[in-house]
Every structure is written in C-alpha cells, then in structure tokens.
Image (tube, rainbow, N blue to C red; front, side):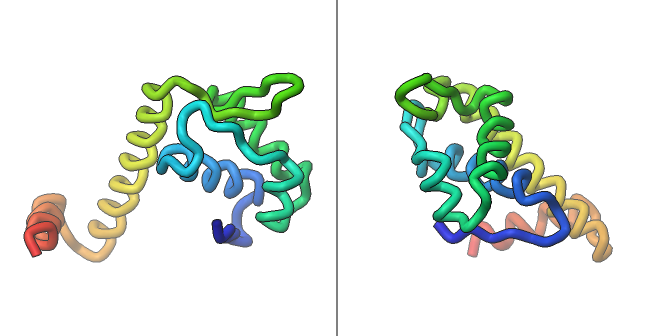
Length: 120
C-alpha cells in the first residue's frame, strides 16, 4: 500500500484512518492477522511507537484485538466492520455535500447531478 500523510494532522490519526480503510475495504478481512508493528511501521516509514498508537486506537474502537503470543487480528465481528464502513461513507457524503454547497449547489441540484453521472 502507498502510505500518504498530510502535514496538517497527526501521523497516528492518519495511520489509524488508513488502517481502518484497509479493514473496511477487505484488504485485512474479518479475523485476519495483521502484520507486526515493526513490519507495518517499516512499510509506512514511520516510528513503530506512532504505529502502535494508531493500532491501540483501533483496538480501543473494537476493530482490532490482540492475542498475547499470536499478534493482532481484525475483529471477527462483521457487523462492526460494516458499521465502520457505513460511518466512513456517511462522512465522505457529508464532506461532498459541504463542498457542493460551497460552490453554490443545493442538495437537490447535487442529487440531480449525481443521478446524471451514475447513468453515464
């Protein structure tokens, strides 16, 4: 995966978001074992402590769990993953609607444009 970071937000937050995206998109499916902190940190070119913080946040949210000697795994609760996926989608839709309103479109005009684009 190509890791991309913006300078205006904490790296661990961006790591958490990108890992969450990998989980909800199925790159790391329910029950999958995650690579080690060191391997993920090396892949993302970040400090392992920063990556550890991101994984701890995902664990706190219930999307990842640790088995003492076996490592970290994605939750097997598919409903939780679906809820996270839907929450991400709603967030994206809200951002899109704000941007469209910012350039002068009403929600109805935006829907009309979307419907037209989907039919293309």
